[in-house]
Length: 216
Length: 216
Image 1 (cartoon, rainbow over the protein chains, first blue to last red):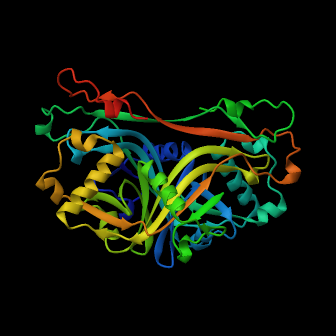
Image 2: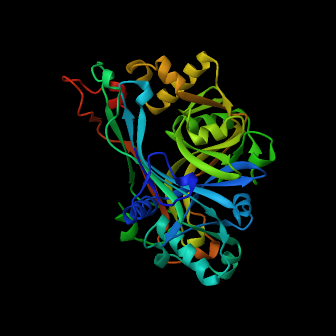
């Protein structure tokens, strides 16, 4: 496993980690930019709450959003949160149960969630969120109106304190286990997009736009 | 969106939820049994930490495990944790950016993580974890030895306090937006298994076992 440390704080300083500079920051961007949801961790009444939610990235800022009434967002505002994005790439089948594992890429970000109040930055955040979900969609769909903006809370999180963990490749068995008559290897996990399903209420004969139909 | 409440505590009592009895418990099992990883939330030094990790279920107990030295497991032991399992099923493309969403199934479980010390239950937990990752693998691979068991911490979490959230189907647009010339619908997300990749160190001509090659 490769653990990439992107900051020098103890909680992201992983065991065998090492500062690798710019290439690590690119690894962080790669994990974030290819994801669809994160798991947002907040502390509510002293206990953790882990919520799956969309996100978007602009430079070194991550944006999440939700209803102004959402408990997780209210709890997160102004507090330390943890955001984790995980991609599963394969099941690692070893000769011993002990050495079974997953191939994955994950990013973990710690920081204080800042409520975005500047109207321009709210739009920036919503743009990033929409484009992360479906690139090209910001220009295709109706943009938020004043009422919708009033009902939406956007939170920003700096990417300053982050770590990336990656495991790829075959199992790592105990040396004495390699002689065992047990099949070992990786079962890849493939995530792909299916055929777009038109809303039954679509009117007329509207083709699926290229930015949706052609997404890979 | 359908929110299924499986317990009567405030934090899993979701807004429009309703007790639905046995069918809800089955929905919880379905979400858990078809997943590969959870996101485990623990509080470390007052701030949340969200860690992707494997899990297994036996009845109404969820098991996670890790190295006895893992910070997240040490922090979790005996404390309130939150475990979330999320399946993404599709990107919901609406006529307005505001009504974009995801189709998903997720389960959220709250409880006190109990360190498993009974040797039989440790094996039960590791069996469940291995079979969740790859059904049939417990019988195929070498089982844990004493040294490996000593290096492994297994934590148990009751499923008593849990909620299930499901969103399926087309977008729900504002009534006045249905006339807009914007394509709307769902882009399905499909997760599947690829062709097994044998470990380069496999000896002889060993076929891929059916429980791996035939997995769907």
